[in-house]
Length: 477
Image (cartoon, rainbow, N blue to C red; front, side, top):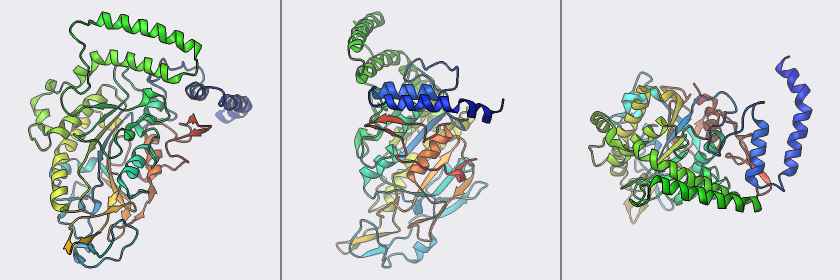
């Protein structure tokens, strides 16, 4: 029997069942209802997931299994990194009449302080401060057509990380782990690393939002033990902990039987169990001393200026290697309103070697094809700036109309440049898409459909893109 014939013959029953579930939505807890709906959409005969983070089948054939997102907080200047604009050098310090930015008063164009050259067989443009990244140029897809929707850091950060500018919605990593689970039940599905300071907006950038607490990002500390209280006190053995957790589970399940809609209680119970398992798994996974010296040096761990980001990139590789689904690393300091040359030079130096090592290392281990690596900020920068106190501030303002993103592995084109901005870099003009389309594309690469990956909350079905989007097919290999 053909697939079409089967669909016709079973369609009415499927619709009736789905309508029945929708009718229950207002009376069931959100977790219970969404679980029923997901089970209803699972392939016939497939077994239900054993737990909230258990691996789940993708909705269609995936091109990637994991994601590592390198987030450059503050907004890198695309015309000073991967999108050269010779016209700006001609107009340097001449008056600008561009509108629609935060800068006020007399504005002037700012030429890039960096030189550009073409690298790799594809001839991708990179500024001269990228010393190591040209080694993996032919693995990169440079996307120049993305547009943000906010000029303010917190709103733009929330939008890129959660799909909403308001904050409080689930992060991208939360949606991914909700849709796919994780391959290692002894580790979190969604891991976050920051520098010494949090990005603007703080932990809302990796919150589970209205999704169950299992899907919140787990933050690893940049110094000392990655997770507090990872080691038990000497007087408490594993057997003591196991008995205590079993007793707690008994009490909680008895309470849950009397309060079946108390979803947060069950999520907390699951988190206790995960923490117990993590005590055994995390130390081994995050012990970088197990890596050969040449690998540590390849990531820049011997250089104080890049050691922190290098350690985090190396930990990201070890985490995805051990089944973690989504890893996000925040690197701050890219908000160069003044001293652009000094600021961007320092930031590029700190991430150049580690991110190059990450891509090379993933490829050498056969992991790059199944790991999507994303490099981005929350928005781009303007081709002009304002004069303050009679002084020309050689920096750039916030720009939502144009930004640049790097992608590698995970089913995207290699050695490619997609999209374009105008001759000043002020606005995207080719293959132009909003952030929600990037989110839809990311989910698509992982085998998820944004229109089906929904969660019933506050009386309606919600999704990462908020109200739908389209796949950016030009990015796909």
